[in-house]
Image 1 (spheres, rainbow, N blue to C red):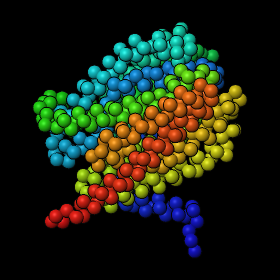
Image 2 (cartoon, helix red, strand yellow):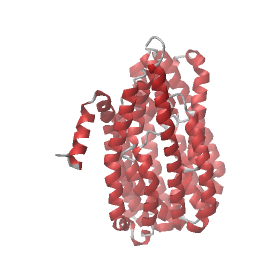
Image 3 (cartoon, rainbow, N blue to C red):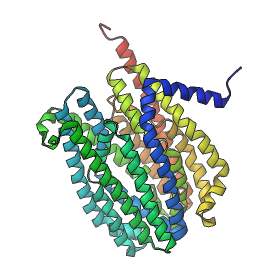
Image 4 (cartoon, rainbow, N blue to C red):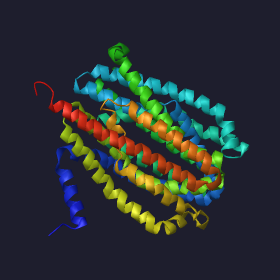
Length: 456
């Protein structure tokens, strides 16, 4: 007798839990998964309170302010967490502790300089953000206020990568939940006291500072525990012979990140510039529901990447395929039922923000088209990095970005939030689909080369 869908899911989950490869991935993911799920609930509560306090238009302005700082911060970022995971993982496996320390020091210093440059850039551009995004020049001070979060980050990306490579997922989880709880309490205080946009922005800023400060502190403690108290004295000359590889990796991931900034991660800014705060308010609510889909799967990206990179380095191709397949099964168990729930109950769920936000539901439906695919195949980009192809996702992203921007310029001024959601879905479909296709081709090629290598 064939198994029921519930039995099939249970049997597959049991197999994954008892496999040594996936059990480690699930264990590490579970800490961040639990934290991200709690954080998503806290974030949703923050969002609901802020929306009910501020109204649709001011809620849209809030989105422009927070994303403006985030985008400028990432313009100068080199996605140091990925570099730290890739190269410190390699050095550690070879017992090169001083090399690892030198690399972490170099990554952290680079990130600190980048954060300072980003903050200066933010101060210069804040008047333009207030005028053309918020459509209110008087908000320039609030743009700069939230920009302090850029400085607070300092070397938080490098710190996160270090904690991941040493299995410190539990403190990451605790700090993430703590940030969400503190932000929620501060927004609740603003809500109960009938506060202003300034108070809500201040609440988000405090949460960002708490997260970045604690992550950085725990990373410094971990570095001392792993490499000794004088780890920061490790000379850069130890990694001089890898300078070319490190620079190529950092620049490729920076360009890839910049392309994402221009498209995927600047969606609210594009909508603010091409439409109005009302449409941004509708879109921001729809995006909050999309985050509920994305956030629980996000931990799998870093944990899968770590395990896959290790197996690729050892040329264990069957294990690589098993990890990728297992990751997609785990992501599907959450993504498909949750998407169906949003499809059916979305019109009522949106009302928790208030009746005036009901136009957000069609935006959710359009968003789902691309989010479901990118969630299930969340590893589509990261698997190409250890395969020696960090440039390919960048090229794909660039082509998709050109198509998306053309579509935004043509459609968003007339159709607002729903057109922006359509362009986001299109971007997800193009990038995830092409990267997935290329990943499968490269895995088959690498596996074939290993099988036919002389002497094996």
